Length: 221
Image 1 (spheres, one colour):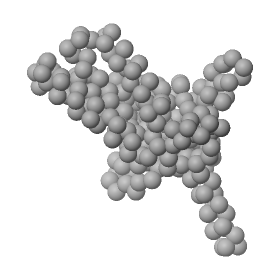
Image 2 (cartoon, helix red, strand yellow):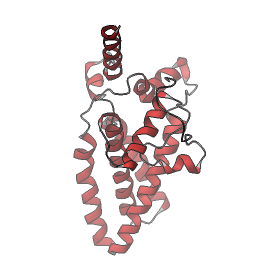
Image 3 (cartoon, one colour):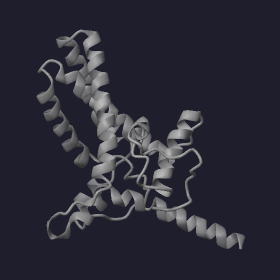
């Protein structure tokens, strides 16, 4: 019985860790898989460049305020994007809605520990940053928009790093354990709650937080 149970658990873990093929095109499929440090490598130089450039246009206090504002903007994007974009099947032509939802997020719920699909590939994150740039430039002056964009990018990189860590890290602090537990609840208890991956406070603000007595693993979704 023990051997069978261990074999079953091993098989289950392999399924959760699997990295299935998503596209018939080899290049597209390869681009859908990225190392978890890719966002750090790609966006850290951009973030630093924006900060240094912002300091030539604004005072340090204004730059810090812009960074915080941009970071706040990312946390709201993280929450609402996860809640309403990632978990919605859109009525697309030719019945492509379910396929689109599966590609952008559904696959992650089927294979939640796939180490190569825990952070956004540049194929997905780059359009988000371009949209953010357009919105931020509409909202703010040509001088102030750059530190805000830098803060938004920093928030995104933190989000991706924390997301990878919730699946493969072993937190030691109480806050770290809480963040990991809440994300595991999202995967293995109720996918209609816990939309803030690292910005967990928005779930409390918008009424999608878990109860203290809920535990992961009771119901797979």
